[in-house]
Amino acid sequence: MKRSKRRRVFIQKIRTGWISVLLVSLVSFAALAATIPEAGGSRLDQWAEAWMSGWKSDGMTGMFTILSYFGSTAAIAGMTLIAAAAVWIAQGWKRGVAILAGMAAAYLLNSLLKSAFERARPVAAWGIEADGASFPSGNAMLGFVMFGLIALTVILSARSGRAVKAGAAAAAVIFIGLMGLSRVYFHVHYISDILGGYAAGLATISLVMLVLQAAERRKGAAKR
Image (tube, one colour):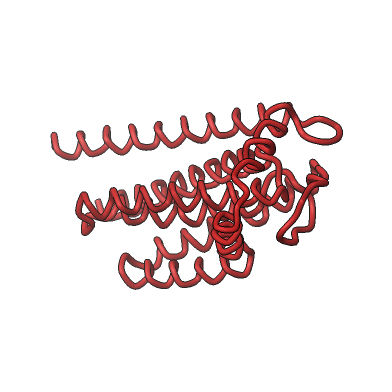
């Protein structure tokens, strides 16, 4: 009885945590959206553009070009299918479907947000091609959701050791960060587009985790 009560309290704390993350991400996105000027970039955008311009070199250009390919819609779709299939086999269909559903929701939400804001891309773009509205960055948002959900799947798995969990978290942070920087490096996005994509991506992940938790809670109640 006590063990069951402790479990309920623990689950409630996790639910409260994800709700808090959802609220923070929504507030962050709203704050970023409020700073978007009618034309051009904000002071933060201009600072980031100048800062990244100082990074220009053949080596950096080569690295960020490769990363930009990983951030393309086709590459993200392919990696999503592979990851979802692997998770489906290793941890069951619900976890695999959660990744697919999360990515589908992120793609739809990003399309709606781009249509709503219709922000023009930076005029100084170079090196790679990009089209469509600028805010929020689809590459940043989809990459955040994909790598975030994969990392969470590993972290929440009872089969994963501490080193594996730490490695998954570190890899997700590095890939998400570098993919975002690659868009600013080539000036196809403002830094506020990237941060907006991260915030919207975090909100999407929060919703996915809340839905998963609700499904698992109903499953546990049905067994009792």
